[in-house]
Image 1 (spheres, rainbow, N blue to C red):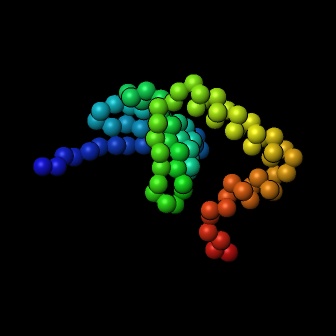
Image 2: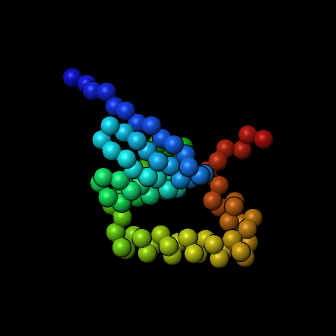
Image 3: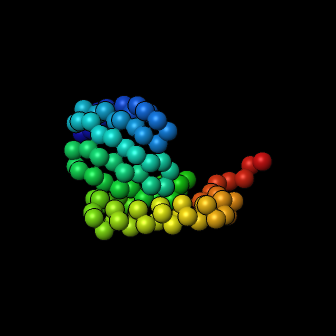
Length: 98
């Protein structure tokens, strides 16, 4: 037998959302490809390949947190050096309609 689910999402800022459901409240930070969710189950990180439906979800540990900060710093420094290359690499998966 099935059951009904309820979820309502409010966007506070681009990439920042508050999620309401019958089991509680959670907050999400991020977008396509990587999202940090803080809720009843603790901090969870979801990494996915946009447009494919494939994703991996894991609890946020210290090692993963430090790794994500290092990756963000490397991408930030690379963006300062060559913004067009970083933009091209981060958006390689998007279809080119025009």
